[in-house]
Amino acid sequence: MSDPKPKPNPKEYTSGGSRTMTTHEFWETQPVVQLEDMGDTTLPEGPIQPPTLVSEVRQEPYNLREDYEWITCDMKSDDMCSEVYNFFKDHYAQKLNCNVHPSKEWLMWALCPPGYHQSWHVGVRDKATKKLVAFISGVPARIRVRDKVISMANINFLCIDTDLRSRRLAPILIMEVTRRVRLKNIWQAAYPSRDVVSRPVTTCQYWGRMLNPKKLIDAGYADLGERMKMSMAVKLYKVPDAPSTPGFREMGPFDVFGVTEFLRNYLSQFGIAACFDADDVEHWFLPREDVIHTYLVVSPETSEITDFCSFYTVPFTISDSDSRNPKNTTVQCAYSYYNVVTQTSLPKLMNDVLTVSKQKGVDIFYALDVMQNASFFTELKFRRSEGAHLHYHLYNYRLGSPLNPSEVGLVLW
Ligand SMILES: CCCCCCCCCCCCCC(=O)SCCNC(=O)CCNC(=O)[C@H](O)C(C)(C)COP(=O)(O)OP(=O)(O)OC[C@H]1O[C@@H](n2cnc3c(N)ncnc32)[C@H](O)[C@@H]1OP(=O)(O)O
Image 1 (cartoon, rainbow, N blue to C red):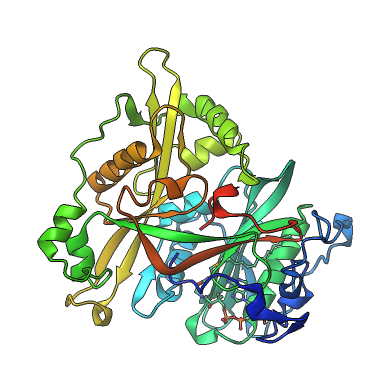
Image 2 (cartoon, rainbow, N blue to C red):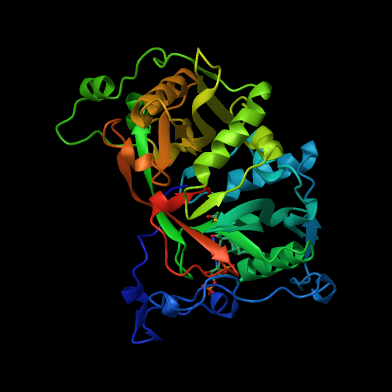
């Protein structure tokens, strides 16, 4: 969610078809668009490899080092969920002393959507210590690519114990989750990455909007701009005390069908997009405290939904040595999810979103430049998060040419 590497530039990776930078021993063997094919838009669009019979999929797990064993994590068990939560807390850090750590409730939400497969929540345990040392997960998702709706796995939360890095364990985890996905007769996957190891479908940029500049600056999370005083920053980033759009209210269970229809219509315009049915909407959008927050604007005359917005919240901890504070600081981060407007302008609706976020204790609000998000960044004082790119990838599916983020109706994290 932060600090990714810069945008891919095919020229950096290839020269006359031969790789000049680095080789990817694992990724070169996988059905993904290879870096040397990045500029080639003539290859056919669609699956790279045809499916096989499920009975032909390798039945036994891949071999691990003798002292490790595979486990399937039951995320609905409080003990298991706590174990994964604690593992991420200790090992998911992307920067020294800075760590995004989703709560247990958040993990349950992200990993247990309708139709999820427990077998896709893959852990590796040290046999002797019984400690979790690695994790990768997939959840089912229907994703439309152009005019084809494809059942895929959304792969995420790949994490390896910091003491076991650079030992080629990640490829084994990826192969094992791939095997388990194929056993469910699913042959494609979508996943985010911060490094470019194959051609991404798109490369998005995170933008951030401070809501609590004093806390962010005091904690060393953000810098006070040049010639900016704290009092000026506080004034600059102040948001209204209450949302101003008439009919703005939180989504409730009775809105599920209306929202499903509304979202489907909106997402149909994008080259690649999530496909949500009512069960998905109920899971992914019905508000859950400190996890997912969804608001609607409803016409007072017709009671119809005219606008829709959502964001999820994840805490971020900055520990001692990286902070100008003597103690750990938890920064509450919100991430824009899906937003749709038909009557209200998007900047106006998002100003209401910033307002309710602030009321919920959010310190900084992020949004990717997907869908129409770029249209509100300047007006609402979002700043480009330096180096914070997220590359979207498809496994075993070739897209003719990469998409602009504005052609993408899909939020990955
Ligand atoms: C049909 C179904 C298909 C399902 C599968 C779809 C594909 C899913 C793909 C996974 C999507 C995950 C989405 C998320 O979860 S994105 C979140 C990633 N996680 C973190 O950032 C948490 C903190 N970091 C770590 O725990 C480690 O640094 C990780 C585990 C990331 C790497 O640990 P380590 O540094 O010790 O690596 P290694 O020595 O074992 O292995 C090195 C090899 O592994 C390749 N590598 C490393 N990290 C990634 C990565 N994030 N995507 C793709 N490939 C990755 C790498 O290019 C190299 O291969 P090659 O360059 O030589 O070829």
